[in-house]
Image 1 (cartoon, rainbow, N blue to C red):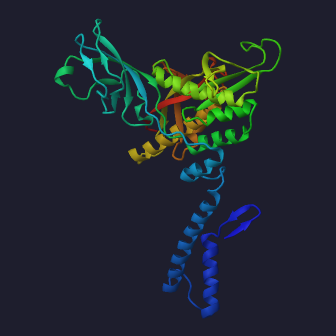
Image 2 (image 1 turned 120 degrees about the vertical axis):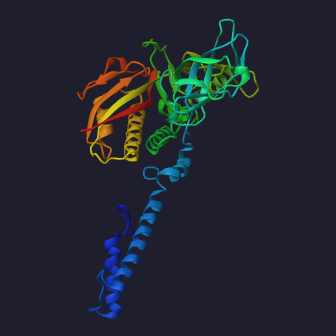
Image 3 (image 1 turned 60 degrees about the vertical axis):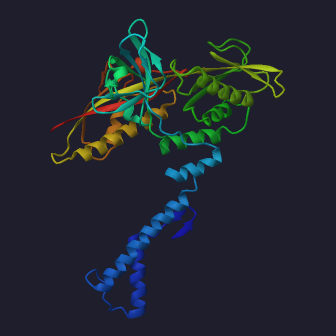
Length: 409
């Protein structure tokens, strides 16, 4: 082990074993038996293996102190330099329409289920109205992508109590996609954006400060520093486009709290006399509750993408567990790829690369994409991008989920 100009250099198993054998020959003579057939030789190899594993752990420990090389919990600790926190896993939400007898109350926490027993709980108490229907927002009981089911997959209540015996599910549709905890790749990219935007009065510093907020997963900041109108932007303004998972189903008090946090960050970082432009307008007061400032910004529309991927089985002996591992890796690759776009055009042939980068994938027969989890379009392997999926600064792409089919050779 040594610290060199290029970083930490660990000793390999072979190097450690050679050193142990050399030391043994110095003590006992050159004719001592050190092959893997002798007791001493086997023992030396056990010691060398243990030392090599220790060297690997020491190497990880050395690089865990640096943001660019840290991983898992070490990256969480290193992120303290940017005052950033990893976004935790979030649960999927769906809009469910139910029918039943008039004036039947559906309590908070009422459980609904899919045919394969993924459960969702009602987030707000509702009463079936004159029309005989009610709309509910249900949230998956498990955080992560498990709740990213397609339209009309939530079919029934978990338990039919006497009071809810008339209640039936008419339809369901995705509202907010669930997401796994922020991956090392995405978290590291966000940390670097924060560090690059230190300071104030610049678009990068405003964006960096917005990205520190827990609910914010994406932000774009543009400015018009001229004396004339540029597109939608008035003169001498800064426009912030923020993806904080806000939808028309988000409770008003929750949205107001998030909006205030965003506005306070923009007010703190923007230059004096610069107009903060946007569709949302938040009024802020000074410490004496007298002087008022109106801060504008715009919530972005997160356009979720769903995929159907057909793979060819590379081996007749491939187990279900091996297939599940491949599917999980592909989903992780696609999620990171889409997260890295940050407003850029999505070129679909790169999705094939996300699949082929996984060990065990020999042939990808087809990939289909949908922006509503209903109508899917074929993607061929040509380098192109569909116009319907080209986004600007006021819209972001997100990963909704993927389903897989396997076919024999």
